[in-house]
Amino acid sequence: MKKIKLFFGLVILIFAGLIVYQNRDYFFAKQALSLSLGVETWNWTAIPIQNIAYFGIALALGLLTAGFYGIASKLKSKKTIKSLNATIESHLEKIASLKAELEPFTSDPYQKKEATDELEAGKDQPVEKEETA
Image (cartoon, rainbow, N blue to C red; front, side, top):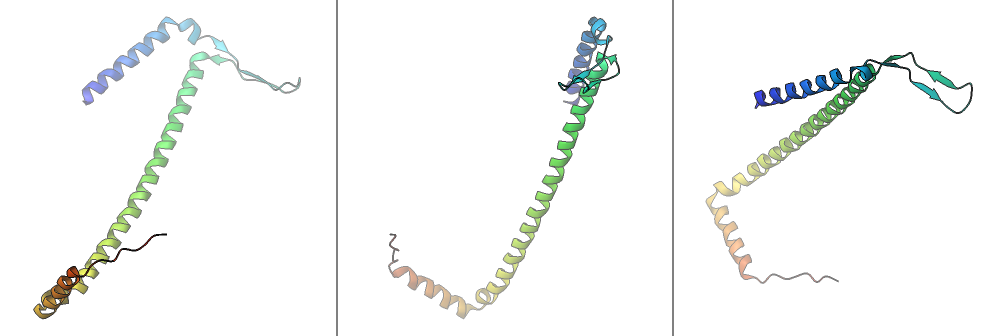
């Protein structure tokens, strides 16, 4: 699978290079960005640079933004995993304590017989349903 991804990546790079090569008059032309806020004195003009530099800057900003969100989601998922593992540990401790409480009842045959007798007696009694209003 890695070789297929590498192959497709190379194909995409080759096509991008072809597009830049075929349109090099546009990509290597220098242009200056300007910003006008409607007031005559509030005009701003950047130094003229090649169009391909603008594309590179936009690509770099996009990659940085995606990387930031990727790292943030990874940290959030680590925090969630840590809290879920803590919950699991607390549940396991509770299970162990409940098993320890149950141990005297399961090891003593007389108490075990009384508990099963009580359960069987409870089965013979009718179950009362609660009325809902």
